[in-house]
Structures are given as structure tokens and as C-alpha cells.
Image (cartoon, rainbow, N blue to C red; front, side, top):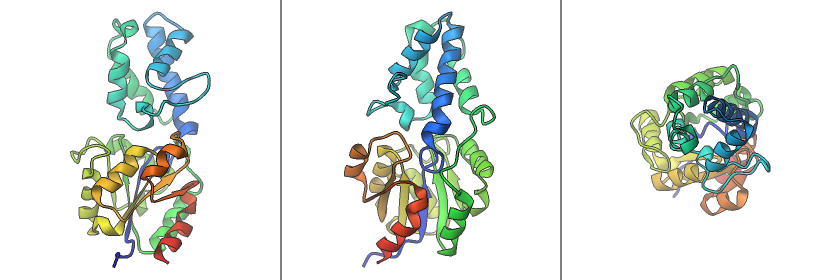
Length: 241
């Protein structure tokens, strides 16, 4: 028999944090600064966005865009390798300054997250975050969102447990909370999140539609799909039934 769900591991950006409302401004801001430092302007900034898989005219992302799931240092490397930026010093530092600036780009929560976490805790679920951002930033975001007290574990791509879609972050969470993957669900907005859940042997990979990855690309890897995390209660009821 399948064990009951005892733990939920959330992705951060696009899942708990509204992806477009939070990150599009950061992507536009950092590419504009990089372009200005290179002596260019708006067209160079738009070119940098396009080479990272985002079309600034349509607002759409390429299926393999690293902006949807990769680490900040991976995105910085893509831009640093562009010939137009060869004279710009410390591209990675500029990217880090923008991506970590919560004053300029405050994280926009998906609904009332503290209340959601309280409801889930009343179910006696252990809760955590696994992100391709850094652990420190994830913890800071959890504090800003008012949910830090509800989280038993927060892990980023820099914590030594591997990167998505590898299963290491799930296994680290499960070990920390004393719950096997078969009793754990992962909730995320990207294919990397869902593949991580499957690679780890989780009870379910749950997709949300608050990121930028089209539902048609999420569906093949998802055991279930909901509009956003606020619908998780109902889905857990259905899974239990």
C-alpha cells in the first residue's frame, strides 16, 4: 500500500513566488545595466534576454530557457560569454546584485502563504523549500514571505546536495524531516522540479501554473496539475481518497 503523504517540498520561484511578477523586472533590469556598461542600449539588452531564452517582445520563454530554472551563476555565464560584453568586468557580480536585490525586485507571493502553511501544518505535514537559488536567499525570502517558522528545511543549489533535476535535494529534505520519498510530494513550476521528484521516487510530482513553463510541457512529468499552491489542500484530499 502507498503510505500517506507526510511531507511537502516546494520549489520557490514560480511556485511560492509569482514568477512573472517578481523576476521579469529583474531580468530586464540586469540586462539593461549590462548593456549600458558595454556601451550599448535597449537593443543590446533585448538581445541578451533573447540569448537566454526570453523574448522581450512577446513575453514568451523558450522551452529550454535557463531563466526558468537554472542558477544565477549559470545565467551569468551565458551573458558573460556574449562577445558584446567582453569588456564588461564582473558580469557575475552584476547579475548577483540584481537577482539578490529584494528591495528593487520584492518577491510577490502566490496568495496568502502564511495561511496556506498553517493549513498544511494542521495536517501534520513537514514542509520545506528546494530551489536553484542560494540557500541564504531562499531563507531570506521565506522570512520576507512570513513562512519561515513553518519550514523544517530549506535547501539551495549551493548546499552540496546537487542540482535539479538530480534527486539530492529531495533526499536531503527527507533525511532531515525523517520522512521517506514515497510519503513526500514535490510542488513546482518547471520540468526540472517534476523530474527531480520522479528521480527521487516521490509519491507525486505536482505542477503549478504560476511559472512560465506551458502546461503542455509540464503535463508529461506531472502526476497532478493545479493552478497555484492555494489549491494544494484540495488536491491532497483527493490523493488521500
